[in-house]
Amino acid sequence: MGHHHHHGHGHSHGHSHTGNKKALFSCFCLILVFMIVEVIGGIVTNSLALLSDAGHMLSDAASLGLSFFALKLGEREVSLDKTYGYKRFEIIAAAINGILLIVVALYIFYEAAHRIFAPPEVQSKGMLLISTIGLIVNIVAAAILMKGDKEENLNVKSAFLHVLGDLLGSVGAIAAALLILFFGWELADPIASVIVAVLVLISGLRVMKESYQILMEGAPSQIDMNEIKKALSNIPMVKEVHDLHVWTITSGYPVLSCHITIDNNAVHDEVLLQSQKLLHDEFDIEHSTIQVEKAANGCPSPHGTCN
Image (cartoon, rainbow, N blue to C red; front, side, top):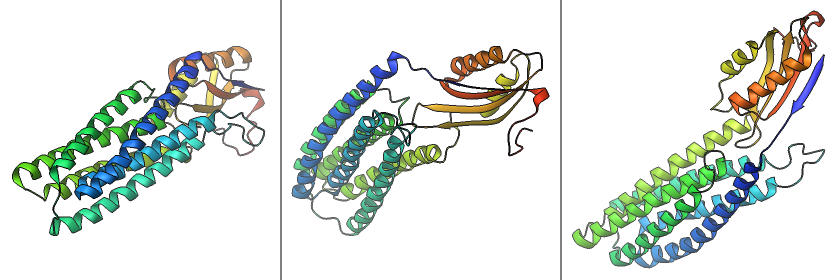
């Protein structure tokens, strides 16, 4: 009978973590300042496209602030009552952020509907100036986040998606300002704001879906459970793999636990080491808890889940 736990983290993880924090904090300051400019600009020029972009930026700033706070909180030490520390807070932050985005999108749709039927006058020159500055700010923010590890970290990824949506929002506001300036087409403003709202809604739903999967302890999307089971079963002397669970603590932190039944002649520790090496090398699972039992001893699970 045996039980083993394996965990290892390289130095690169620490470096990317610090990089993520710096990237998130720089973007947070940048976007917060510009959001205030955009709100004032939207009110002065009477542009819904600018105000909706500012709404997107508000959710952006909230997202970046929450993400930064989550990374800081995630650094806190593991305790006996919080055995994984505060890492899960990052996912709760992402979920709150997703809800916030959906609410912002619905409000923009509501406002735009009113304006489509009665387009107000918009000061297109002011709108053009502010939306152009917005585009530059978003390009800078996107470039900063590109350096973070957005593939691994859900919060950096969601922040990057926000900024990308903002960037397109600024392009929409510029296009609307030009249409109003040259053709007097006031409808361009609510139409541009609807396009921004659609982008906001899509990114909100995407973040919600990913964080929901993690909060529901679902298997990570990039991991194929059948492949893992097959690979472990192919290890010499392994008779059966059961009670297999894979879930995610926080983004980029998959965890696995399982029972492995081995042949009576097998060497327990050899199978254990092979299993862990395979999980680490082929599936990027650094944190695994494996219980190895000899076939002759039967299954120790009280729930009878060994078949």
